[in-house]
Length: 166
Image (cartoon, rainbow, N blue to C red; front, top):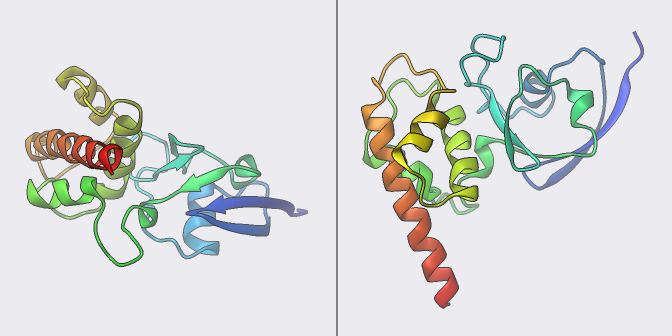
């Protein structure tokens, strides 16, 4: 099978690669780019562990082929923390509210919440539950995750307010 040439920007870095046409975006990120924060759970798009942002929108990377990402901008969980190691406000909130246990589902939750708060920094409980409904966690029972999202929203609003006044 002949390989396809792709050009993608992942976490701000431009990559050019020759990939098998059937290679998933998740496998490309994990195998070719060694970005192992993107987890592969069900491989059917149900669990959300493989969620990444493609052009700012949350997608299941196990369902998207790497060739479909050609020319696109991708953000993985590795893009959230600052280069000096400071956690993103969403990561801080998940840690403070114990919104994770084993951590397997956490990258998907973080990126789904990131997309939500990018578009709506003051989401309703119903909207938060709708977004979280697309992510599967087998450990936490979701209450701590709900609290984490509310705290993350407050933190994101505070950062935006501070940036606006700077």
